[in-house]
Length: 270
Image (cartoon, rainbow, N blue to C red; front, top):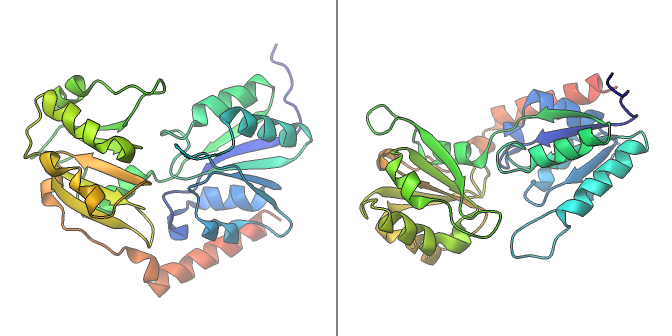
């Protein structure tokens, strides 16, 4: 017999790559209903417009190479608030289930008898493709797409040989600090130096910047001023890039519609 759930509830909410109008309606409703927000570092401060009055907002960001709140501490904070009977939103950039540690946090909280609901968001890899004006899959170029991090949890490298042989578009997260090693690993695995490649920084936000070139020249993105947070895209599809930047945040119609949805979400939350 399953043990009864404890009071309190946690939403693992993906709020997308940065622009407020890329937040889903379901995410708006969860954010408006939550009494406590525990917010990751890469979440835009503009998301605060979706909070109801009186919401306790706490920033618990984690970023590689910087002093930050440990994953264990974040999980304990979430647990403490939920066990106190509060509704908690763990607010994450992108999608919580794609390199967002959503699986780890959900398992931890459910293991303590808490109700957990996951709200998907738009990942920065998808936003990067939109910013470049490309499709990550294209019948003329590839048969699939692979999302991968630039390093493993043990600070090693992915299996670049397997990835190079796969024939898919590579969308590489958290790779800017290892961009030269990524280039060298793929070249050593047999991928051609002329393979189209791109880097998009702050994908899906008004601050987005992009660089396009080839695998052989990939490290030049650093000289062009691009840095973390950024997504690296490698594959023939990048050859179709037409750099559709800036994106739609400046369109007053989109901003007005987003504001209307935000108001409706607050009203629905009571």
